[in-house]
Image (spheres, helix red, strand yellow):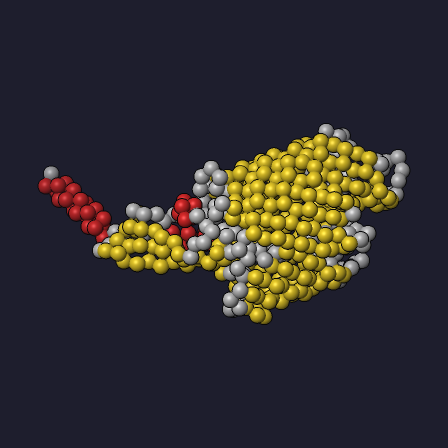
Length: 421
């Protein structure tokens, strides 16, 4: 009994001593806020008033803040207020978030085309995205979007997109290529959930109608002159991210999984499943360099359809290859790039880059041997330049030139907003 009492006394004494030594966060403040709501940012933090001081949680909060569109950079300071009581101050450098954009490019038949748009990435000071665009590419298109990742709580949000998109699209039949006026009109609703700082998921549904109207190309009884179908798409996105941000420099790993099921009302456009995963690895090289890598593995239902879901395209996977030059039902794409800051000032960065883009596809209705068919393999080395404004969200204007070194290789310039990956 005496020994049990002694053990109990030691346990109580140790517990009281531990609590007495615990360092407590008494106050959490922000410095540098202009457009962000302090109450909103505090709702995202792991460190809160009357909790234990933990440097690991503070570092997690800093990376969380840096990922917000409205914040260019974040840092912190810990101050002793009284014995064992501390104040944590998060300092932020805000981004300008009302962003107009304009892209000018050539369409599939070399006519001038452009896209104009406007996006606010920090509406109401709560990092809500509101945006829209107008595009002229032979035909008129437009789209609207609302994205509120923290609409219902610090973890649960909603996104809604509406698009009326019209393009000139090639379809690849056995007998030849046909160009269609393709229209996609519909709405998408996604629920957004953040499990923790590294794991996020999105799940939702799209309801849309596709229209195909013949423009030119090979025509016979097997080639439809017009086609329309109502479709429903179920989508699941799952992202894992463990990346450290320092302005335009990234260091770490990210995995982005995209799973979709498409249901069609037209037998000539059958239901199909599609899934792909992007694996991204970023490595800081010295003070001014960044080595960046992306591997995409994709697989879809292997239907012998001219409208296969994976496309070979300048703006998606292979710089310099051309606009939608081929389609497939499975894909392996590898992009590797070295970026180096030639000029890195307080607000402006000039980056140069060299890259190699490579990929191969499975033909619609084909087999996995298609991956090693020289007609499907494309390798494009190249170089480019980046003009970056450090205080405007996603203000990266890029120009790349890719040159094909595999069979039937082409070459060309690719313009865009934001880093390629």
